[in-house]
Image (tube, rainbow, N blue to C red):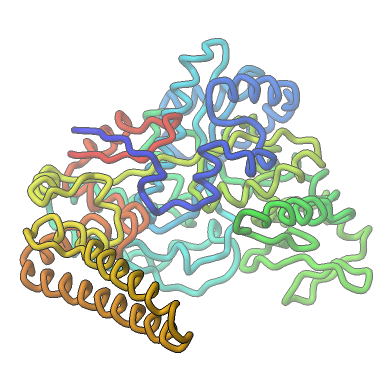
Length: 530
């Protein structure tokens, strides 16, 4: 195994928002609290310790005990759940949708980032306990985003009727998906493990939340990972005051609207708030709550409440009130003694819209940490890159730019016409001096001819490069094939591939080397050669 760290700035796949955040650009500083370094964590510990109550800890621990009741868990996870009752225990959390068979590779990177950071903080702050948490997005209803995963260039899809919170979805029909997936895997020892993991997860559990918990627990329980399902009546009871505030005062809309007005001066806005940022959740639907004609209505249904009725419903049935993308982060921070949220660039960009809202409701805003990103390169691929003289930074160039650079490097012909253009421009300068002594019409003619000649040279320059690429067809094909292998669809592989491709080849070693390689607080992109 060989690990190389490269600044995110050199990769080319990360937004201006995230790059400015990593560089602590003054333009973005007003939109977050503490930065992800040891000094920031020391401050965050002090803030969270005084704001998270003992009673909330007991509710959380009891809820987690109930959620895990029918699961076999490691002693380390059991210990971590118990530690959450103690006032010096804090969580490091990440979250992810309930993608079929974990979805894209970065599911692993998020969770390992949380595990490794919790371990690193335990060493730095020995008087505190740190628990890694995976927050399952069980209340999402964007089924089209989670009903598939990619394996070996093929899309493995679960087709079923959409509707409601995905965590409650029955796993019926996943036996057909299992049959299709199994055909692709073969019969190696690693293939047999993947088949068993899929079957035990989806064919032995009745809903998607339990299936996902089982799979994540199987992969990471030995590291003490705690998995939280927010679709829980006892946890929702802790959130009642904030739901009531939202229904009565629309605090999130007011606070976030002001924030994004300032943020939009320099950055792209990820999400926009609604006047009420809550859904009403039923067994097979999740619909927005809207306020019209002095009534709280559930969109696309006949359900409606007066003000008194909806508050009674909130206390009687808090599980029915589901936060949307604006309020979900607050819900997480209300029920967890959380210090840090680890997520991708898009996630962190919308968290940056929320600090003023957190301040308005007096909840500490967590540290935001960009998750580890990884490019896996096999030994064979590393040898090919070396043979083609492609550096690790160059690998992430636009394919046209990469090929052009390498073709130019590999030719003895001068393909850059810069000197010729400068010579031509000098000749026309002399002509212009002559033209200035005659009529303006001649000067205009000289200027027009200059533009024509320069443009002609530029066209010839492009034609020469095109011809040289044809002459070096073999080199161009090798570069194209290799980069497409490493960056499928000209995107980071972590957004395209499923972990099963690498597990099939390397087995548990793949997760073990990730665990060793990922350094969350170094804030760099990781290239892993195995």
